[in-house]
Image (cartoon, rainbow, N blue to C red; front, side, top):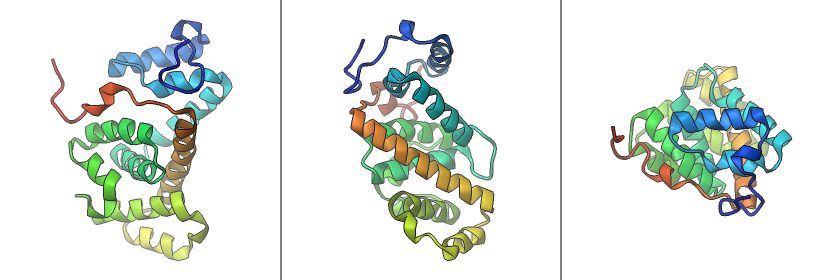
Length: 193
């Protein structure tokens, strides 16, 4: 068991059930390393499976939000929730998906000053409301988003991503999950060939 990435025991890859090990090896093949979240959450296999199934349902589907926009939501709300792991990890993914080495830092610190479109600004305003003040969401919030071309299904996606990563942020903070060093340079410097 490795424990430097979490307060909880982290199982060895070889000791994991086959389905989990296969998924983790696929991620490693694609990224060149195993993101710590895959190992830290493996502490509880049934919850791991549920977490990643919902993650994939939200983050990997085709919808009115681009994959980069979904990552913007994660980065902005994760910073608001004080989650170092998610800001670092998803900031790296955002830089790659947006093909922009600056956007993740801008969105994390203050999306209102970031070099993003008015549509994306409205999206993040709503995501932040879901993350920090969801009880005050009303019809006017939907009208604003509709004015920027978002459908009701898009608005669901914005809210679902913000809410799901609220769970992720709180679990990562509680477990003391550490981001992989590889994330810090991803999307900032050209990839070595």
